[in-house]
Amino acid sequence: MTISKKMADFLNRASWIRKMFEEGARLKKELGPENVCDFSLGNPDVSPPVKFFKTLQKISSENPTGVHGYMQNSGFDICRKEVAKQVQKFHEIDITHESIIMTCGAAGGLNIIFKAILDPGDEVIVPSPFFVEYVFYVDNHQGILKTVPCKEDFSLDINAIENAITSKTKAVLINSPNNPSGAVYDEESIKSLAELLRYKSKENNKIIYLVSDEPYRRLCFDGIKVPPILKWYDNAIVTTSFSKDLSIPGERIGYVALNPNAKEYSPLLGAMILANRILGFVNAPAFMQRVVAECLHDCVDITIYQTRRDKLAEILNDAGYEFNMPKGAFYFFPKTPIQDDKKFVDILRQEHILVVPGSGFGAPGYMRIAFCVSDDIIERSRDGFKRAIDKAKELSD
Image (cartoon, rainbow, N blue to C red; front, side, top):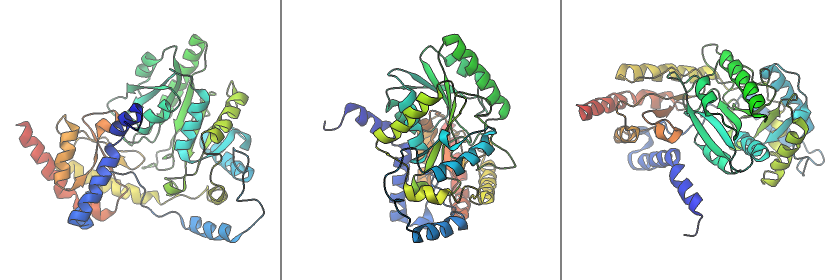
């Protein structure tokens, strides 16, 4: 075999979202896009804010010396200073630009974090369901991802996390609003988790970091707010991107914020900045740093996603699916009417509806439906969702 055994295994494990996306492309070509309802990919379709385009034009017309050259690996100070203001607002903590590292999206952020903190065999605990790429990000740096179940409503199960902590635990990784469940962890849960990690860090005589991956922080519905993380736990690291709130995932721009009160602040910050370079990112894209520095207070129109959520909830409810109403992000994660989620996803595929089985997110018996699609696609899916559940009932009888 010309590729490594590990990568061959990863190709099989990582393929569900991509498989369904590629199947959607095939069906659209065969049947016409107007006859396919593709909910497989979490690719935001809402247009970026108007200011983003105006800023693009303004920045591209300027030509100051050196802005397209190498820079310090943590990014431009002017951008980091603006980001620090946003972090201070979101996390209710005093923080300066020195604690900010501009990254190639949240994926880049997670990789520099894990490169900096993990020794071979260290464990990272993550509540399930979880974003499948976490497995690979942790493995990239010789760590082990250890999953724990959430509660039935996808809220944090603090007892399950406590039972999973061992002497090998180096971090707990959370994602709120959550992909794929749409859950938002409330402030009491965050405070309880922080208290647990303080206790366990002292008990094990080693720091257990809290890593928060939050690219959907600003995509919340019904007035819900994501609670601060840095406020409640000193040894916390936040990473995010502008992929969802500015709707620019292809630009690969985000940041890491390290709590300035972290116990090993200076070596950890230095390690992450070095990781940004030696992992090959070098620095976040220079042009996009200058753009987002002027667009931090802007956001896509979240009411578009909320309207779509409400419409799809009506469709799923009328068809008889069991689900928790998503509080944020742009995903539904309903139970499949039969336990074999892959089989039910195939039944939906026969109805020309593409979703992703929950097995791909560590939660068999569920499926992820991404509603970052047009209103027309959502409405066209109504009859197919109903026929699929009727077929599943026939199989169960």
